[in-house]
Figure: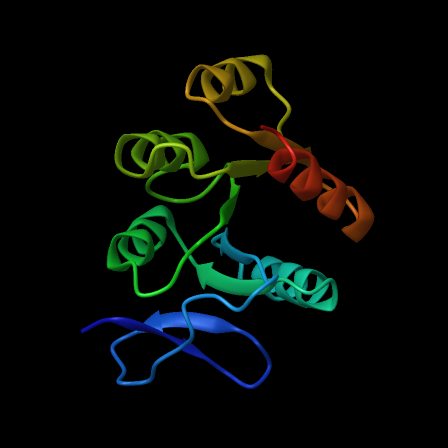
Length: 149
């Protein structure tokens, strides 16, 4: 069975291992960060962990969908890059909407192009954050999305 593996530094990967992880600790939000750049994932992991979030990682949309399908642990939000090889952030958003309904999704982008934003809104994207951004801007966007009824 495929399960997440969390290292002591808080970085969680989706590997074939026999380790287990708590589904969710009280008050801790699990965020799946999807980005093809490992440095970006590491930076986001450190920033989010410093604010009390548990971070899981996926290097592409396929890996992210595999993790969501496994349901070995609860994901409370997906934070995904827009531009990635293979399926982009919009394609990932569409698949999440098909299979996981209202799971909150925030798209990170350095390309604030109108067409992408319209497509994301049509597919019920919950939030956007434009790169570069700082930790406070990211946390504000996460809190804004999670506070919606």
